[in-house]
Image 1 (cartoon, rainbow, N blue to C red):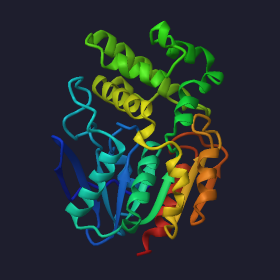
Image 2 (cartoon, rainbow, N blue to C red):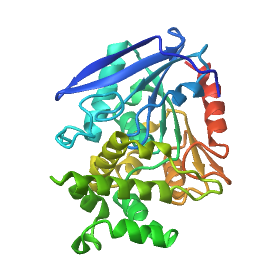
Image 3 (tube, rainbow, N blue to C red):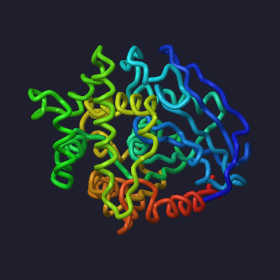
Image 4 (cartoon, helix red, strand yellow):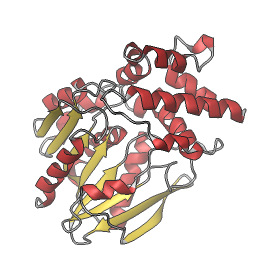
Amino acid sequence: MYEAVQPYAHGMLDVGDGQLVYWETCGNPAGKPAVVLHGGPGSGAAPSWRRYFDPARYRVVLFDQRGCGRSRPHAADPAVDLSVNTTDHLVADIERLREHLGVDRWLVLGASWGSTLGLAYAQRHPARVSELVLFSVVTTSRREVEWITRDMGRIFPAEWARFRDGVPAADRDGDLADAYARLLADPDPAVRERAARDWCAWEDTHVGTVPGHRPDPRYTDPEFRMAFARLVTHYWRHAAFLPDGQLLREAGRLAGIPGVLLHGRLDISSPPEIPWRLAQAWPAARLELLDAAGHGSGHGIGERVLAALDEFAGRR
């Protein structure tokens, strides 16, 4: 990865609804604009994202999506209203940030949930996207949510049983994301904390399909854990607040936008069928499946992200 760089500008953008979104820019102020869409929802834009880009050639914009990271109010507070935190809100925030920074078009880099958000943004505003680089690709459909929250129990049966049993018996045959969201809104802080721990334990499990997987240390932070669990369950129970299957159906809106889709063949919780179907509907996209990789940037995916960004760096 490229050398660690510090932002040359940052701020809090008032996007309405009482929401302040943290943003930062780094690299070359005259370079090719790019925006990073982090995963989760609720992971926040970690400094490591900066290192994918050649700082001499890119002007990189990172921001923390509503309710997480350095944005305020923070979803770890159970009193924070999530009704103003939807995909439409986030897409509008990206556009406000683009206009605020005076960017005409930019490359979009997104991973996991960030790939869903990147596709939604690009389909809504194709004239503002120069290229898309997406890895660990998902569309957050109802079937994908059901696959992660229920079918992955066939891969990790004991761990899934503990996850299922974290909700009341009457809810165990229903929508588990919905059941956990209700627990995370319980007036009893002990109930909320237990639900956040159980949810994040399963999150750490279902992505662990490659040798050497290590637990994510972020889940030991109570504030991160609570905000992450609240935001993921909020978006998953509503299937990303998108008509089911829309991102595949409307892939034609991406015509003419070059894309690179990077995915691990061992990413069982987000099966490779997802980016494969997207690539069939989006001829300008190149799909690269990495045999040894799972979900995330390890086992060669990070290197391919760098290569794709280097490839696009000179394209205007």
